[in-house]
Length: 192
Image (tube, rainbow, N blue to C red):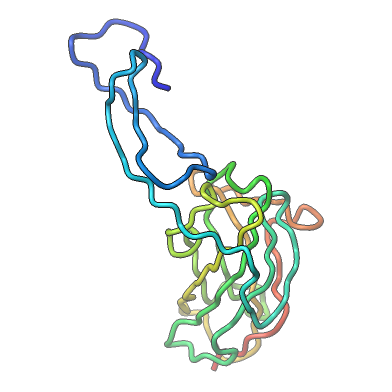
């Protein structure tokens, strides 16, 4: 619902508003109406298909990020990727009851033995196509990331960590077990 602006204004007033479409909205036409019922805008909502059965993944994680989501598992395309090529990681999230209450960015970092980030990917889930604000409780989301190596990357042993943060504030979501702001993924990566 749009609320009239307080204060003086002329015949034409420009006001910015943000509207959130509920994650449970059905596909079809959506209308933006003025308080008097006049139509201001019309959109066609395209609802992504719901994935209710867990897709396959190579390594199980099974840890929850509060009520936001559960990281069911992940698949790493190549555990010994060269540092000149991107490292592909596909996360499998299962939306929790609180998923649609925020819009978060996922980070996947590859850390060397000294804890330095040697490769990373930060993005809205599913390459921007499935923001957490549109997740529906219980559904699975495939979230593919291509980590790019930086100048610190050297051959050796490394580990992956995953988390989410609010891009507006930069604040990480610290709701993993123990109130951690990230989770270390099982398995090892050995860049060459």
